[in-house]
Length: 423
Image (cartoon, rainbow, N blue to C red; front, side, top):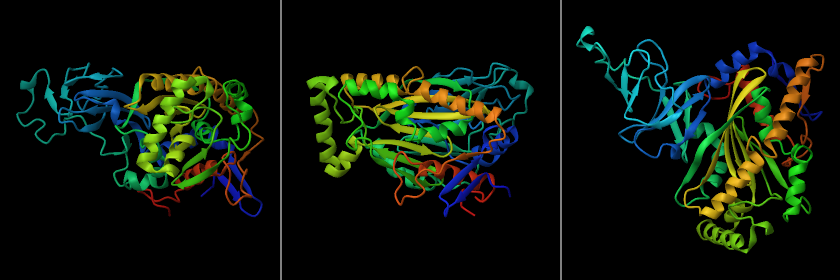
């Protein structure tokens, strides 16, 4: 079967066919071979703290209900009435004992059971004795360290097997809290006129950082940060199954433990407390890694966890070959004090928010790529070769991006058999 990549180890060359960014036929194939078979992030357990809490989510092209029932169990339902198919829930979120369909008023409790319908006497007394008229649950729902995923393939490997080497880096995020991590408030939602895979690449692309985000780094330098003397050193790594990471030091402050002069002496004291707690719990080496290193974690196909100046969860879903919808959430330790929380949110909005310094730059770059693909079909290949001549690629090399494309190509050419195993 036709390959979408060309990899030549002798020449240290890695190419990606630009048709994957523009053709509707390829997008339809992605939906079948990737989004129907991979574990996809739906939400964080902290978003449903109480019985009856729910969020409406669109995942893998499907309208879903992410819900905590009266029995405390988290479930995911297909948001479609078993009667005539209408979406049962139209609200983005809330708390409810009953989901009521707008069309014919069939009602379901927050565990998905059909509990009411007008004109019940016109149905058989055995109606729904087998439970087939309840809200249909997504069969595979699993979580890791509070991150909840769904899989529409009943034969897929477990989530833990799927995450593989990425678990080490998710642990570094989750271990920042004694009481657990929590998502803050409502998500940010925006769209980009570019192919979804461009954002997957960009999210673990350290190469673009300094030239694309120069304005931000100029501002950081006025606050006591700098990009010199190895302050931006790190590595890029293939974590298996298409997952990847860049881990590196930075010029900016981190609410976990990296202090900047602009935060003042009170901020320094709070940072020192956090450092002490982490060191007592994990030892100096792991505490230093948690506190002072940044991580951009890519979970194939469309989840990114940015553990940088603030922790951001970001998902992105294709609508058309040249258009995607993006959702971003801020994540933080539950026990964090008000001042640290404010600093974290300021950092989140300033850099990673839709109106921040980084995200508009990134969106502009991705849209320029998409325009280039559309208008110049004669230029057929993207080059992602940087770092192939190194034993250990750095954070500004492209090994982590190649990891995404190798997995993508295996799934799209069916070199990965059902259930997630390599063929």
